[in-house]
Length: 168
Image (cartoon, rainbow, N blue to C red; front, side, top):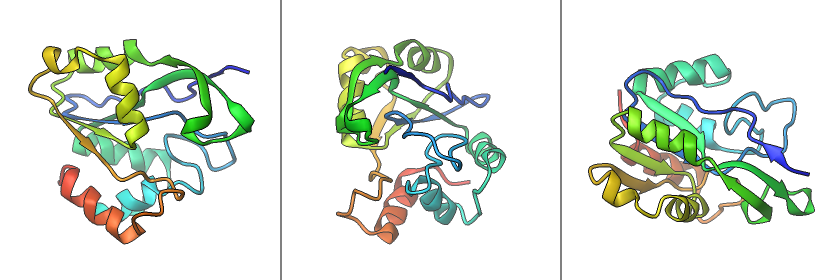
């Protein structure tokens, strides 16, 4: 069954940064916005980076407005093999090209942050001429916030995010 992205895009006024993920996991009661799945470490990491509790959608959006961070996913719609949240089990993918292109064309994005190599690979596939069109935008690979990415401890992920993400 085809799933359509439930959250759309979040683009604060004068966004300078863009975080790109893959596609939301299967919904559960905790899933109200990007990466809110109980197991995903994204908001836990950002909470430690910015020294605040990010336990509501409103707090997360307030932080992103303050930091001028836009967020969306590279996949607009897809199907899941094995009813799994793993990126490798996402098939029949439709890219979120129109929304991402609009963000890149209407905002002065300085940096794009990919939440995994998978996302980076899909972005390069969906936007093969990206570097020619936006030569002053830099790309960074963040350590995956997935708990399955066990090569790095949570502490090490926090350290890397601090190095790469904007500060207040």
